[in-house]
Image (cartoon, rainbow, N blue to C red; front, side, top):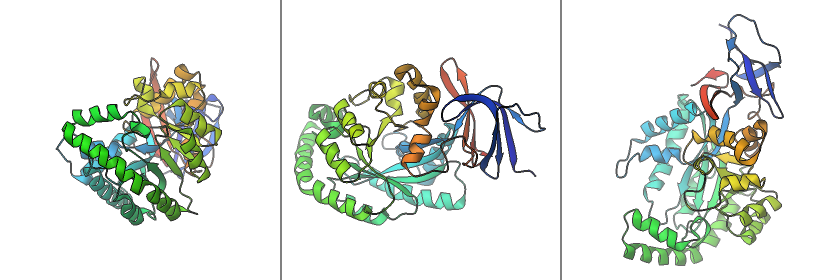
Length: 379
């Protein structure tokens, strides 16, 4: 049996142009590109559909959604991971960084269990060769949490680790700079007002004690490692400058324009959330991703919590920010791959991995028709 696959009559989304042509896949890699239509027996006619590189998602919380599909209904961990994997694959995400939280600030204790089980299941399922997408590890480190550092010390040298982000979800800073909004969110989630007020005061005091020592310890543990560091929910240009001085190269979901502009000024890659673009705004009242994109301040799009939003968000960049399709697609393929040091994927070029997605447009909506990872059809 031949290990070759020929995909022809496709609109190839290349790094700088869209060109109708043919791709030859061999041994898990892209072997050849041609602008001609193939007449070889067995060639797969893509009927003029788009062919883009496999999507690289640097941050998704989707596993948490599968573990807790409904409040108080925890799903078995392996089953949840396999469901998560299937959803990423059919969404065209061939490389996914599962963002798992280290550290609890008192409202999300179950996330620590999800992190431990997620790391365990990721490794076991990867070694078993049963996953459709390639899953890698993104550790989200809650700096003010008393239990963050012990968990980081446990996982910081994990072989699948590809990214670490520094978070601070204390009310009054970052994503929750609007303390009143935070208060209302927690009450709506079922906590009493008295409990919320007490916990907010405790968290503010805890941040004063824990955040800085934990930050220093984290940076020390990862010093000299080729693991990209990101900060989560940047809101203050002065803090962005400090992050850049500490060697942090990625600003993940900046909450306002000044923070995003500061990140760009310091040469940091800026990540925006796909749901923000698809929904037309932030679910938590922060800056619109479309506004960032119009200012040229979006380098990477991440699924955040909806893997199917990735490709739709890239398509929306053409209308929302006037981007050409190759540049828009690069925000979900080449740019995230480069930021992670994954230089073997993210572009349709000979010698790179044959991670590819076939897309047909329904009006202006991109619809995934087929997905290949390493030359093998996975969806």
